[in-house]
Amino acid sequence: MDVTEKLALALLAALALLGVIRLFSAPLKLALKVLVNTLLGFAALFLVNLASGWTGFALGLNLFNALTVGVLGIPGLVLLALLKLVFV
Image (cartoon, rainbow, N blue to C red; front, side, top):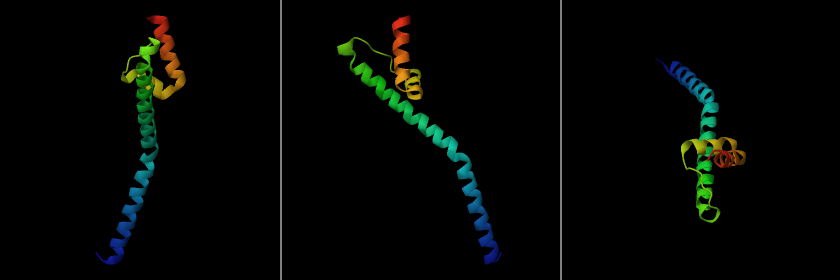
């Protein structure tokens, strides 16, 4: 194998790697965004529970609630509060 074949093979491998990275970049960005929003949801629920001493209102700190708040944001927090007030 001479230098030209090695260079062509390296170029082909680099293009293939670039294609794979481009193929998986959108799903990875989405997964990272969901993870960050879920962590922010946990933080919002933690703050609500931290203030429960003054307000007397607390929401459970679990993955379902964090995902709801993480995906929906403030409306998700309001939704969970309304569901707790209506059903509990």
